[in-house]
Amino acid sequence: MSGHTDMTLVNDEGIRIDGRRCDEKRPIKIEAGVLKNADGSCYLEIGKNKVLCAVYGPRECRPRHLQDPTKAIIQCKYNMETYSVSDRKRPGTDRRSVEISKLISEALSNVVQVELFPRASIDVYIEILQANAGTRCAGLTAASVALADAGIPMRDLIPAIACGKADNHVVLDLNKEEDNFGQADVPLAIVPSTDEIVLLQMDGNMTREELDHGLDMAFGAAHEVYDMQKAALKKRYSEIEKKEGATDE
Ligand code: CDP
Image 1 (tube, rainbow, N blue to C red):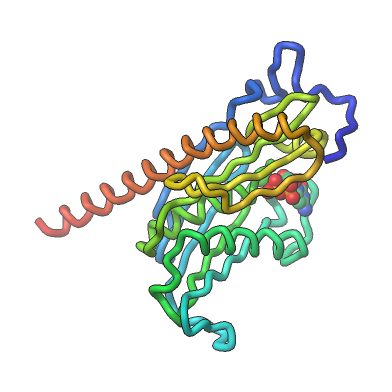
Image 2 (image 1 turned 45 degrees about the vertical axis):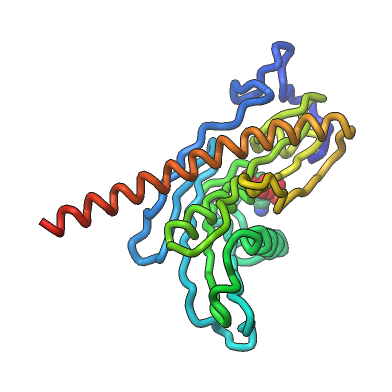
């Protein structure tokens, strides 16, 4: 988020580098139940981001000292693969991945009915296979679909998308260039049934008015992402039904 570049991020016609208008999100693909061994899983693409999420649990929490006698804990591991970015990223955990894992876990704790599973752990693994900005939003969006696919009771799903500012334009769903050279990046995640905010960060600078406009776009887009999450789960359920029908006969 340097805010200083000679690169044109939004041209005079209001078109961005990847051809989008300022209020357009990138194309999204969501598929539930892609991994056989996991209790629940999801594969998600948004633009050039590719994310895989696997969920295990509720299961006995290890190490035991982390167990909570009143509720399950959500242990989330966000991992950006070495090959997911153009400069080889050092493998393993770094401060950024610890922070993102924590905020995704906290966001999910707002919707998962953790009090139903005392002492248990719900483990959420998020692998970023290809990154192009917005991976925390993509990971969180995939995680709630994977949790639902695992049959874990939840109040709602969590769609997430960013808004921000590039070349003095308020934009939706920033890509890598806009994230690197734009003026602000504001990832947002919501609980659609109540419009509660469960994640909101801001990096850069925007006026109050610009932020209001950005959040309006992001809320609208998050509701569209929510419809896609539900559609992916419905598709998964009908596939399971078809398979069960085939084995009944
Ligand atoms: O991915 P997200 O926007 O949630 O987080 P970020 O820390 O703002 O990173 C923005 C983007 O920078 C990532 O999506 C990657 O494309 C890129 N990045 C990278 O190339 N190398 C890293 N070590 C970290 C991020």
